[in-house]
Image (spheres, rainbow, N blue to C red):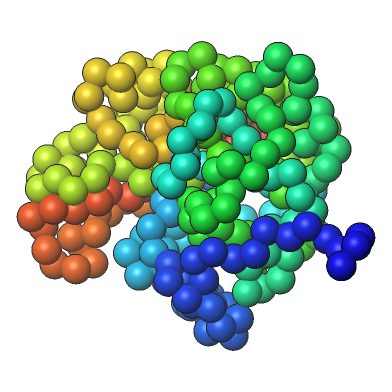
Length: 281
């Protein structure tokens, strides 16, 4: 009907995570309760979280999201790779909201407008958002833990160094002055024997803990590590540095083989948080 909100409806509820709201809340609470207690690190500013089905990577994701238990954010920026559509640059959803079984999340139209600048790397478009799961699987965790936040959903069709740098700068320039959380959605190595996957994933985790986007970018480019959302992680780290974050901590990692018992061909997952140390200038 005319004037109705333009809402991006859930594409993978019932597949990647439960479609029933009560079951979804129960499962997220169970995963959060089972995650290790957060270590003191300072003010949380960012999260790296995997985006496989909750059966496989949900408990790992919960290791990072548990750090948000007492947090409040006005805006959450989620950066994801595009798995199903090919396009240049970065797209931000042009509509009014993203929805999950837990309800709609309003898009932060002000941040979106600032990011969509002539000649920039970000444009408002439906490309990358139609059926993409990498943003959507993050949202129920955020809805369970946070109240009253708006969303900036970004999908990277290009993950080259120039786009990563431009996106990191754009987020740093356009993020609101109040509390903002940046979420990078990424799995690590794909369909390798577990021992090989763990070696490659260890390189990515070391680069993340070093808070070194240049090292991660170089290791990805030379095949020393793998991450389907390597670009989102690099862009997020660049943006976080621009916004004053001082460090990152890997809080959990595993492979799908740890869940299924099949270690012949696995996918790697890690969870990390970015923070600003108390008293940092």
